[in-house]
Length: 456
Image (cartoon, rainbow, N blue to C red; front, side, top):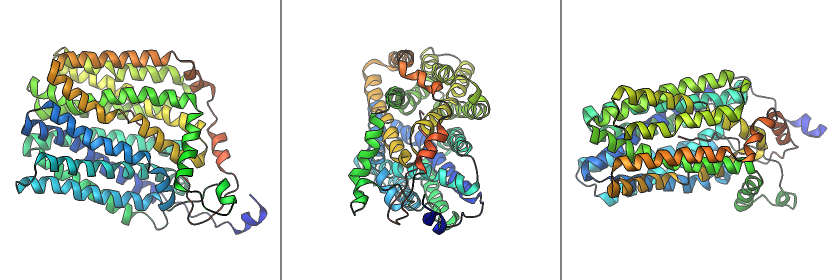
């Protein structure tokens, strides 16, 4: 940075934890509502149509727009700033989610219109989730909170939503019916939009400056597709990140099949009902929070590769197998607790690897692309599971999915790229330093911070 740039640089804002609290609160509210809906919506479709295939179709129609829109949102957030994208998309989701119970109460909700509403919710939720993730590093800077701790808190927030959401959703659906859960989802989106729009301090979440590109040096701002290509080109040169994305894409597909179709069908056939869905999801979430907290405290002292694959082995196949065995609920709950605990170690490790390998000014675009590619199979998970259950029954599908989960985890772990997980530890500071190149503070340019990947 030149002496003149240093002299004219604005003073750092005073320390404030309000942005971090606001972002985490908005994430907690909207994610909890989404988890409630993840129980209420499949149960509503299953109860009204009696079809596992239709339940899978609804899951596909919601998640396909989520993945597609999110994949192309990075440069948009770059230009507009994450704050305006977050509150506006949450507002759209709130309206669409609120129309579902309203139209159902009026007898004006044919199946095709339900699909339209669900697609709108999914398409708006992708950018909203990504925008909140993008605001985490800025909130950390304003609060003088280490970035690793901030992303850890964001991960714990997600796990807590996964814990509270199924409990609330299962209870609401059991007591008041699925429309109550969908109403709560609409309220949660509205509250999340309000928190971002009103509760955050002025100036938070604006588009930030990025290093000048070749196009800018020639006199014009970088275009949307140029920004998009820069993120894609970097990701293509990273074999470890690509291997992680492919592995998680497969396991995410299987997780989606499990959550959206296989567990609801198991709950109906076993007689447990929505309460069983809520109980297993809550137990899994509590254990995942515990695993995440322990990972934040001690994972930096442990071999990443070993812990990562041990977590996947615990968190994957056993869930499918225990449901296929028609085990007592006490055994099911125990297996889900172990699964959640193992899964809690995954995202802290994935986040650390991402920070170490991606320059700061590319984190947003790379995260948007990586998340979308890793989520690419999720829309198909419920659809394929619904068809498979209709054709061959629940138990064969559970055992097949569990076997695929195990094979994917074991075979992926044999690839040589995984050695880089431990070999390049401590390079996060170097990656951050690479992003602190001389920057142009043009108001229409933006910096794309990081968002954490997810496997659940």
